[in-house]
Each structure stands twice: as C-alpha cells, then as structure tokens.
View 1: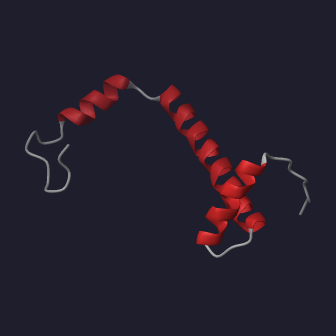
View 2 (view 1 turned 90 degrees about the vertical axis):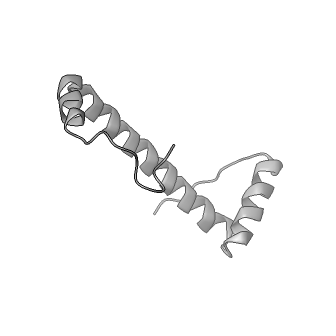
View 3 (view 1 turned 180 degrees about the vertical axis):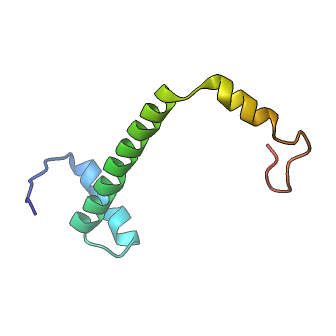
Length: 78
C-alpha cells in the first residue's frame, strides 16, 4: 500500500471528518472507501460507454416492441 499526503482546504476536511464520524470511522478509512467507490463508478461508467458504442438501436427497438404495452406494475409508475 502506498501512503499519500493530500492537502485540502480545512472546510473539506471538516466535512470529511463529520461524515466519517457518522459512520464511526477514522477520516482516512472513510476517505479511502469513498475514493474506491468513486474510482469504481468511473470504471463502470467507462464500461457502459464502451457498450453503448457497440449497441444497435434497431435491435433495441425490435426487442422493446416485444414487450407488452400495458400499465406498469405497482411501484414502477413514473
């Protein structure tokens, strides 16, 4: 594991400290967990973008045409 010094405004650190205390975690553990979540989200979004590039709108519309055209299930309403 690498150690990194991160300089940030006091206001941001105080927010991190407050959020970490709500989770009963030290600031560094909380921040590391959030950075992991953030990097995973960026990677997942990049995968979705790559999949969208190879997607076929015609195939999508053909598949959607097979779906029943009725009222949504309870809880799925817009």
